[in-house]
Amino acid sequence: MARVVSLRQKHKQRWGKLFILPAILVIFLFVVYPIVYTLILSFSEYNFVFDPAPNIVGFRNYTSMFKDKLFLQALSNTLVFSAFQFAAMMVFALLLALMLFFVRGRSWLFRTSIFMPIVVPASLVCLLFTWMLANNFGIVNRFLIDTLGMPRLASNWLTTERTAQGSVIVVSLWNKVGFCTILFLSGLQGISQDVLEAGDIDGATGIKKLRYIILPNLAETYVVAGIWAILQTLKLFVTPMVLTKGGPANTTQVLYMYIYKTAFLSFDMGYAAAMSFVLSIIVMAFALLNMRLNTRKD
Amino acid sequence: MQIKLRKRDITSALLLLGLLLISLLFIIPIAYCVFTSFKTTTEILQEVTFFPRRLTLENYAYVFDRGAKYINYYWNTIVITLSSVAATVFMAALAGYAFAKLPFHGSNKILAGILFVLAFPLTAMLIPIYMMESNLGIINTHLGLTLPNIITILPFSIFIMRGAFRGLPQELEDSADIDGCGVARTWWSIMLPLAQNALVIVLVSGFYNVWGEYTIAKTLATRENVMPISVALTLLKGEDWNYGVLSSAITLSIIPPIVVFAAFQGQLVEGMVAGSIKG
Image 1: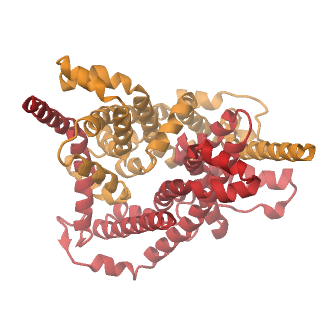
Image 2: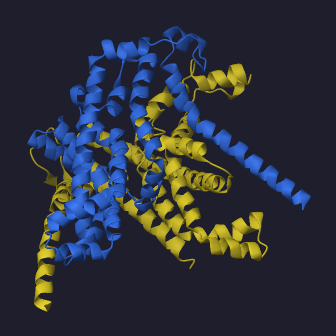
Image 3: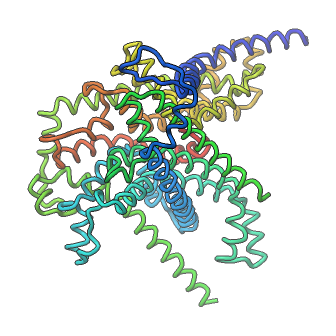
């Protein structure tokens, strides 16, 4: 009997390998192989249009990065944008989730409108915002000048440095915060009723209940939402690309965008590969840091 | 007691008001786009109102009549989306089942590996993909755009399907074994129908992810005739850069994902949480 079982087990294992084959094949060809190739490219000089083959140059791409002003600016933009966007994302998402969690009655309308931007194509959203924020006939300026009567608040949103940077952050947030809210909302729904009721018996109400019972119980959600937000913010690309095209004067050019331009407009594949590895390392470092910070508490 | 009750009422009224205002912030840009698509050009540029005064269909007429290229953009988006999602659903349903019910030596390590590579930003893969596709001559083709889109949604889909199959009772499989039902038939006619909910999640979330995908298309579609709507509209210039026409084209392309999302909201929200670390 045992032999029969093990034969069947073997048979099943063979089928298991067959079943994952298509997925593994695609992942290998379009994920694993490209990542390895990028690593090799990052140590080479290779202009895709002019050079016949990559030419190994050692760490030169990595060292020249730190003399490249555009790279340094893009790197600092990426880090600054990410910091602001990450903080805003976590705070707003948590706040929205708490509001949706505590509101009485059916919240279908609220949920749908807050979650809806997630499914709308981001590039088209940015396109829409480019003319809502336009100087002369943009509805935002019209609203500030004609409806509120405060022309001083109106601005040339997308061509002034500060407001262009702010617009990139706000529009990305508008587009993405819904997903983070879903994560927090499910975290809230995952807190067991017993825990909440025990708090009621102890007399914890309102702010106290929030501070001592609800927020500490979201530890797991902070990790998941945090990693998601880090990935999203460091990989910011669509918003600056469509909304501001990196301008004015490269003040909204992020690393991802600089890599895109280096690789596909200048075809300097080696240098672009090295920069994408630096970006990958930054992403992983922050993801790990986030995991550490949030699990140490227990 | 009475005071306490009143305080509670005020809090919940404030909560409602706050949510209402926030919801408006999310709806207004989309509503503005839809309204603008029904306005005349003079109204858009000179009057700058939120609601349309005189409804007109001229913008939509333009998109359908003179804009053969707009139809072509939609066609590209539809072809790329449908083929990526169909391929992904098929591969994820197979792989998810294998990881859940047909484990073999090392299968867990492969699964962890799939999770790990997810952390890499797309740019780290796009450079070689671009070169590879360029050498194979499939750059600027639907196939060349479909294949990389699959990998952006496949890992998440595998995790969703794996979770669904793991939730199915072992007895089902055992009784299928006893009945002499082969692995492939057990998967297709017993397990797959029971994992319907997960299939819907994979289908729908894959649909709107590919539908609005920008980065891959921006990189691998350099000719206008294969560009999906998400890239093509951002490149319009001159005569076509007309807010009325643009907003009707945008409206037409945001309606499908919104309708699909509204229909499956409950299921989707759960599913997105289950496989939230993606992309």
